[in-house]
Length: 92
Image (cartoon, rainbow, N blue to C red; front, side, top):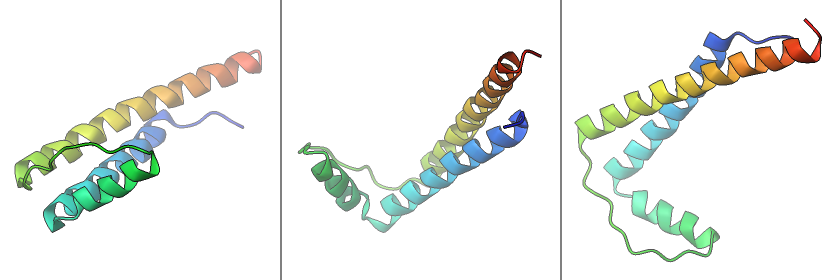
């Protein structure tokens, strides 16, 4: 495989992580986040006592932005490492 565009990889990873957290925020807003987590924890043989805080728009916005930025950084670094490994494996 050829080298990748690190910026595009960052956008894809950051965008994907941000979308996942938008979905999470919607689950909290709709009041079904606990049902979802109970199901996921059950699949992992876990039974935890926890609570979900009420939906807060600004918290949700910050969550999406921060996770999107971190996802971009991780994707960008992954792209750079991929390209370095690709060059090293081809003796360039």
